[in-house]
Image (cartoon, rainbow, N blue to C red; front, side):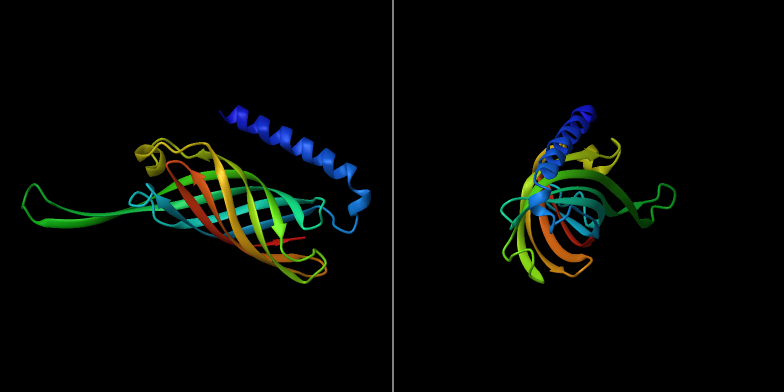
Amino acid sequence: MRTHIVGVVLASTILFAAQTSHAQAAQSDRPVQWGFMGGGVGVTGDYRGILSTGVVGGLLVQWPMEPRHLTFRADLMYHWISDYHRGCGHSIEGGSAFCGSVDTWSRVVSGSFSVVARLNDPKTGWSPYAIGGVAAYLTGNNDEPLVERTSPSHFGFQGGVGLEWRRAKHTTFLEIRYLTMGPAGLYPVTMGWRW
């Protein structure tokens, strides 16, 4: 499975790098941008009651496309999601009650290829945007709650909305996305920077 994912990632990267170099002369005012992002992540559907919330961080690269309102984006994110349980029981010897809690985590690595559609022209100082595309996932160990209690899919779709502020040397963005990872999904809320 991992070999297939790596193959798809490499083939897609080569294809879009070739497209970018072909259109480079016409788009020299909009270079390829690199960036990073971080924030929080929540879960929906069947993952509720198993997982809680967590943190997410990632890297991205963005290529300009024609028309000017569109860009192609690839990103890789690491999700660290909490699983919190609290329970009470009785000791065998004295019959007294005791309570305890366990804090465990599930890990997901997601990679996605998306098209970003801006409302405003790239030369303006700010713009709302929509993002949508496909995603692939790698999950943690078999004893982590996500894998142990569900059967998460390794492929899905993702989409969301965001707002970006462009400056001379960098762009700041804030976005929320929904990643389908059957039988439910993840929703990272992130802030990031591109340059």
